[in-house]
Every structure is written in C-alpha cells, then in structure tokens.
Amino acid sequence: MRAPAVRVRGVEKSFGDVHVLRGVDLDVMPGSVVALLGSNGAGKTTLVRILATLLRPDAGTAVVHGFDVVAEAARVRGAISLTGQFTGVDDILTGRENLALVARLRHLPDTGAVADDLLARFGLTDAGGRRAGTYSGGMRRRLDIAMSLVGDPPVIFLDEPTTGLDPQARLEVWATITRLAAAGTSVLLTTQHLDEAEHLADRIAILHEGVIVQDGTLAELRTLLPPATVEYVEKQPSLQDVFLALVAPTSTDGPTQEDPS
Ligand SMILES: Nc1ncnc2c1ncn2[C@@H]1O[C@H](COP(=O)(O)OP(=O)(O)OP(=O)(O)O)[C@@H](O)[C@H]1O
Ligand SMILES: [Mg+2]
Figure 1 (tube, helix red, strand yellow):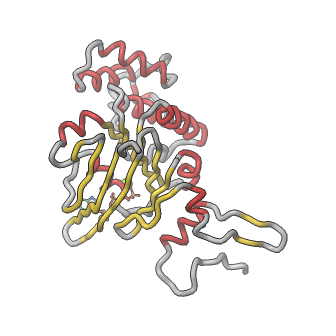
Figure 2 (spheres, protein in one colour):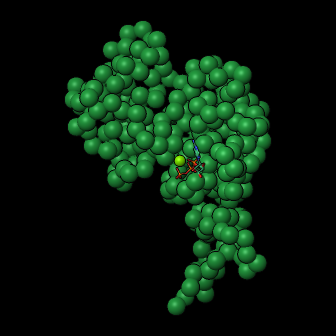
Figure 3 (cartoon, protein in one colour):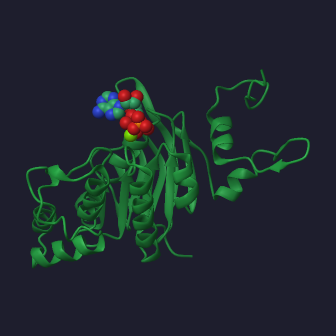
C-alpha cells in the first residue's frame, strides 16, 4: 500500500490551559479528499495550521509528503499549499498579478505563463486584468484556490473553502476540488457544511473534544446509526444525523430525537 500523503499521530496542542488537540490520528491517502468536520472551536484550523508548519504541535508527529512538519518544515512548505479560512487575495492587484506574485514567491520561471494557465483553468481569463477587489465572492474564492495551486503542490489544505459562497460558486469549487483529486492531488479540507463532506470527501473525519471520534467513508459512518424507520419508509441516516449523534453531549438516552410536538 502507498504511504499516506498526510499522516498524523498523537498530535496535541494547547493554548494556555485550553487543551484543543488531545491526540489526533489521521491519514490522507494520495489523490484522496478527506473532510475534517467539527463544531466551531473544535480545533480544525489549529490542526491545519500545524500541518502547514504555521504552528508547532506540543506532542505527537505529523508527516506531510514524507516530511516531518517540525524537523523538515521547509520541505513540507515546498510540498503543500494552504488556502485559509479568510482569503489571501490582494484586492489592489489584478487576478493575474495576484497569481504572478505567488509564482514569484515560489521562485518559478515565467510567472506570467503560470498566471495565464491558472486563470484559464479557473475560468478567470476575462477577469484576469481586473482588480481582485471587484470580483464576486465566488470569483475571489476561485482565485484564492488558483493561487494555492501555483507550482502544483501535491498536497493541499483548504480551510472552509466554500464558506460564504452562493450555491453555484460552491458547486464550482467542488468541481475544482474533485478535478484536483482525480489528477492525483491529496486534499484535506475542513468544513462546517455536512453536505459538502457528503459530496466531496472520500473519507470523513470528525474532530470532537480534541480527538478524531470517527473516521471513515460516508457509507461506513452511516452504519454507526441504525436506519431510522418510519411506518412505511426506510430512511438512511444522513451524515448530519451521524455527526449530531457523535458530538452530542454524553447522555444515557442516546441520540436526541426530534420533538414531535
Ligand atoms: N493562537 C491562539 N491563541 C489562543 N487560542 C487559540 C489560538 N488559536 C486557536 N485558539 C483556540 O483554540 C480553539 C480551536 O480553534 P480553531 O480555530 O482551531 O477551531 P476551528 O475548529 O477551526 O473552529 P471554526 O469552525 O470556528 O473555524 C478555540 O477555542 C480557539 O479559541
Ligand atoms: Mg477554523
């Protein structure tokens, strides 16, 4: 079996006395999409920042594209890109200039050609000469993701790639991510949107109270709950049912049922 593109073992991180990550284990196989789900404050961004070498773990190990995130941080940075929860687009520059700037920072030859290629791949050729400040939310996101692909990194981290996008722009971003994975890029994304995980991810990992409480395919996660049976319809539990059951405060009477009144 091929080595994982991302391998996380026992990673811990505290901020002051807040123990955010308490021993996270996670693998991302090459060319696959893994969605990391968790409530606000669960530590998703913290984990992504550790994998992108922006934060040091307190304990545990993380290896990205064969490199240790602490001991070989520079080599990890050469193999990844991170699209943050808040866009990295410079509004003053045009789309093309934003891309060329990243290409220059990555020491690529012929930055103009790199920019033009990515503008074309992301349907931004016509808008490429316009200041990014004039772009719609979906166009900015696409530009942001395009910027993260300069130099074709084999591993990409996307922190809430579709937050704030309208449904059509989300579909565009989903199609982009699917294409990337099909071409062999390994993708770890965080999301609050359970339908996003359902549509995009090969595997879904749920981060809760500092650990991955479940990790599997959608079909595997669905088997965790019995199918909800109504009098005449049998319904598969949705990912939302599974997620809410897993992150519910521990109680003896099982997953919360909707109040029929
Ligand atoms: N630099 C920091 N200093 C102190 N506390 C921090 C820092 N970064 C994160 N935290 C805390 O760590 C916890 C996890 O934050 P994190 O941003 O990783 O959550 P998240 O799962 O990404 O949440 P969201 O869904 O809201 O983006 C939060 O309680 C947050 O306040
Ligand atoms: Mg976050």
